[in-house]
Amino acid sequence: MKKNEIIEKVNHLLVEEFEIEPELLVPEALLKQDLEIDSLDFVDIVVLIDREFGFKPTAEELKKVKTLAAFYDYIEQHI
Image (cartoon, rainbow, N blue to C red):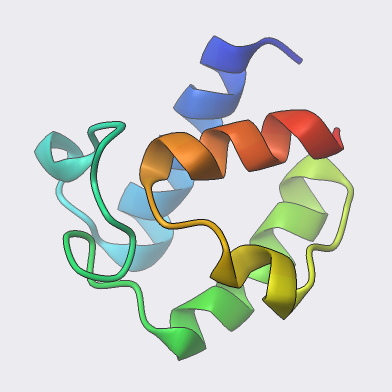
């Protein structure tokens, strides 16, 4: 899967599942502060990543991901 496909799929999930405004989805956006993704949302994100990308991230790994760009990179490295 190409990087742009990952970005499109992740952005679509964030808009649809977490009702995040599309204009907020910029690479430098901070997941917790800018996108207001909380710890309960991360549980849902684990399920979505497993369903959409075929791997299950750990909580420890996701804690290290701070920005949306880092989130894209994290997924790209694991698929």
